Length: 355
Ligand SMILES: *Cc1c(COP(=O)(O)O)cnc(C)c1O
Image 1: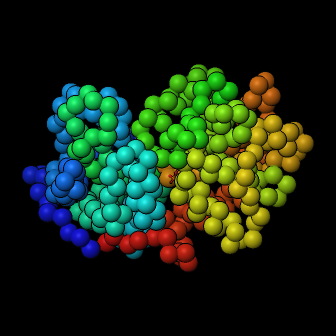
Image 2 (image 1 turned 135 degrees about the vertical axis):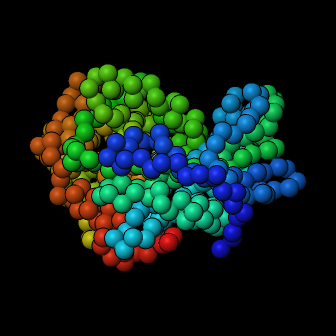
Image 3 (image 1 turned 45 degrees about the vertical axis):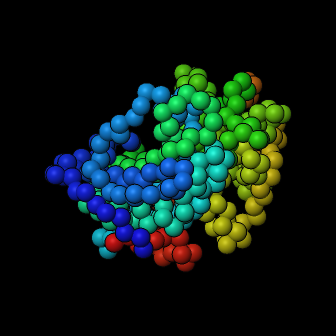
């Protein structure tokens, strides 16, 4: 494993109470940084005290959003160790996001090594209360001091870590979602399959409108035909219709989620029929009204599995599984979280021990 030089923080910050943690507000003592410069490549990987990053007001990322990121977690296992869940998948996705945004890709093994070394150094920050974890945020952005519209010649790759509380501290309650028919998140040919900040900027308005109407998330339709379901909020989405699990196929505007991939692999190993295909809102609501929509859930690193209890679209309103979490949804949640926190065996080799 590659080892990077460490400049230690003079003192460790006090650890927050895991019960009152708010997502993404508290950061650990250190961060990883690495620079890119044309001609020199990626260089000077290092771990330094967490702190502000000085930048020119004309830095390219601030104007043209040449930026990509990742999100994964470190989990405290019952033996007191710390483990990651499929980190190479995140490193490979970061590479694919970089390529789309004309950012020079970082060797995936270097990304995994940097994450591993940083988490090992910050191991005391991985909380041990049930459901808690250390959220890891790698990101890459353009730093050229120039307003010219072209690919930057300099970049910074950074990794920061934030302890997070249990997502379902109040128990798993199915959410109400709303089919967004005005805004779109992404289109084929655009950046929907990448994790880039710009996708999120474009999605905020719909989320705010959904929230104003009492919905927790937006169900996104495709940007061309405005009829095929793509994702729910910033999660992938799955439906069990008549015994078969259906999830939107990766058309280019759908983010290839690692939780999505893990769910499909589990479902296949359990012998549950799965289909990756196009599915229209019409088909979904018709199935629900015919009593054939058995379960529905979102998948993503933050919530792992988020059951959907109610859906609204063009004045139609359906309730899924009586508004309760379904048996298959529950089994997926228990299995993935069990593997992540090391409370059940991992026959798939998904977890990577850090310390
Ligand atoms: C990150 C993300 C997901 C979920 O991906 P995971 O790898 O499962 O965390 C789904 N949709 C969008 C838009 C995302 O940004």
